[in-house]
Image 1 (spheres, rainbow, N blue to C red):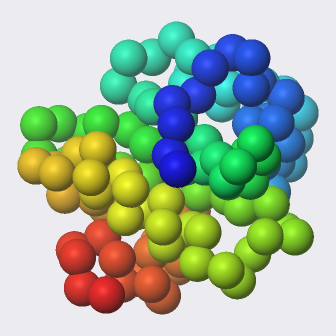
Image 2 (image 1 turned 180 degrees about the vertical axis):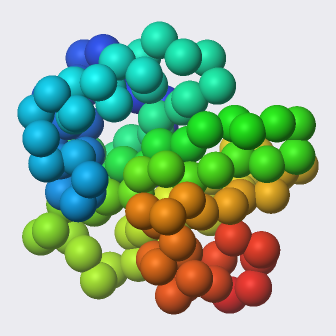
Length: 120
């Protein structure tokens, strides 16, 4: 289940974000978290299964037509189970009237799964 990020989940969110190649540096990671917490056009969502948060997806609402996926990360012990794909599908439900587009950091995953435009 996709849930909105709350400050109480900051440490787990930072841990999941740190798996992104461009978020290895602590200062960069803290800056990214601050952007999600303070900028209205950025949204961070967490994937929760039972009581565990095992995934994260972060977006930038570009305009009234597009939402850009900036971050997508799954706990390594839960990878290859379709969680990333499920997060994108759930995101499509949250933004039904917007096109989901990847950025340079998420393009390879999104294209591999062919899930932004609804072709599954």
